[in-house]
Amino acid sequence: MCGISGVVGPPSAGAVIEQQLDLLHHRGPNARGHFDGSTGLVGQNRLSIIDLVTGDPPITNEDRTVAVVLNGEIYNFHELRDELRRRGHEFGSEGDTEVIAHLAEDLPPVELACRLDGMFGLAVWHERRRRLVLCRDRVGKKPLFYWHGADGRFVFGSEIKAVLADPAVPRALNPRAIPAYLTFGYVPSPETFFDGVKSLPPGHVLTLDEGSEPVIERYWSPPLVGTNGTTRAEVSLEGAARKVRELLRDAVARRLISDVPLGAFLSGGIDSSAIVGLMASVMAKPVETFTIGFDDRDGFDERPFAAAVARRHRTNHHEFVVKPDAVDLVEKLVWHHDQPFGDSSAIPTYLLSEVTAQHVTVALSGDGGDELFAGYERFAAGLAARRYAVLPEPVRRALHRGLDLLPPSALGGKAQRAQRFASVAARGLPDAYRCWISFIAEEDRNALLNGGRDDWALQDYRDIWLGSEGAHPLDRLLDLNLRTYLLDDLLVKADRMSMAHALEVRSPFLDADLIAYAMRLPPSTKARGLSLKRVLKKAVADLLPDEILKRGKRGFGVPLDRWFREDLRHYVNDTLGADDAHVRRHLNGPALEQMLADHRAGRRNHGHALWTLLTLEVFLRREGW
Image (cartoon, one colour):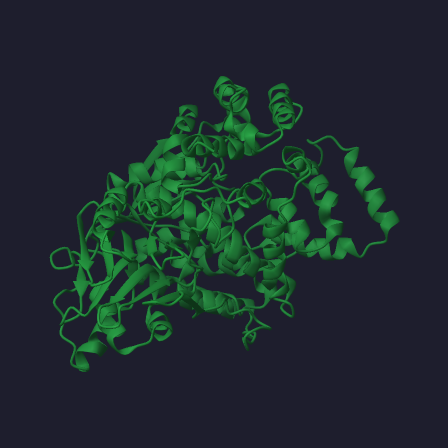
């Protein structure tokens, strides 16, 4: 894994690229270098994973007319290199980056991207053509940001801070960012908090020729049945499970290629446990596994489940406990994200990456299993909402009133979730789904915004949904989740928090072949009623202890409700409750004070909302906005 950056424009780019490389040092501390073209410079900070001897940047083709910088891994580079050698290409290194340089000699940008199997954000500089090409992997595992000025200057980087290193790039607040952020906990791609700084969409390439505007082209779309000519895989649950097991095994094997030590994140859930089980079945020595946990007062501690998997597969297991002072990391987390980030599980992910990086340089994770195989309860709720929405209005009102009378602890603690479901289900999809995933409840968000709305983000959300019309509702929900929550939350968190410690994280569930097959499976193989991830559970059942298969879904959560009421009460009050808090310049102060008071008194649990506002406050203070 690495950090890449570059500038196309006047000669002053030389000083800028050095500053970019300084800012991205954490992503690649082993080597750095840049290629100086006539009008464009591309640079790279290298984290050495494969080809430790000859793979340092800059990497070019034979005559140095094509230079490539790569953040990520190309898993099919051996096959591509053999093909290129048969066609007469000569190689000076043994890694994957040079393969791209030689491919770029012969292929146009879209065809080049289509040939690559991996996770990547990359840049190709064609010196003869004075052309820059940027490519991003299919689902967005690796980031890539850019800015294009009116005078033609173009700046890019793996992180926003590298783009802002160029003094030509203005640090201006995107006026649409805050309303969208309060809903999603992030600014939906391709927008960012910085006006004019964009994220290259996943599955796209950007081509910039001298004197022209950038051209952005899609090279991959999620293979959604009912769109793009994709057809349903007609297969039984048993047959699907066998194929999923085969594809997942192959995906894990491809991600074990490394010249440095590797291990795995282990949460005790089905996804990461399955990855560890498959790793243990093919590795000659015990798998290094790493788990984060909390004290068990709130039921957030997954260490016992992870330990059961570790014993089952005889791994070399490491544990780490998060304590409330971890929130002191908020300044670091915002710096690494370059923006506010509402997902509080960034705290344990940062600390898990820190302890993991002390032992290995590469870690496999279970990211993507829920997104491919319908692992979240909200998917079942989405299907139920379709049926709820067609009930007669009197029936819905009666159900709603009945649920409102129940105490939160009723129905085995599920009353609160049922109430939340009924409160918005009648809106239908995708609006009900958006309400369920919102970081700040709609009524609180409206109060904070003085009645303002995030119309831009909401419309984009609906447009993604409308674009999948004709597909099965579950497939549409999975597609929506893949292109929003996975892209802008889970993958961002995994990348920034791991690369903060120069740790490479690989995600076998996001393998291109596995995605293509999983998205074609009948919906019933994934979810039936409240039975979720049916085909995946069947595919990996022999790898997991019974208690892992039978336990309910738990997120990588943080006990913020208690932290902000007890240990960190004064911290959040001194930050968000201060008269000079920067959030008060943009949000309704009395509404914020009411949320703080309600949380302190225990009238409502605003832990996640307060974390969302806390990271926003730290960001606004840093920028002086």
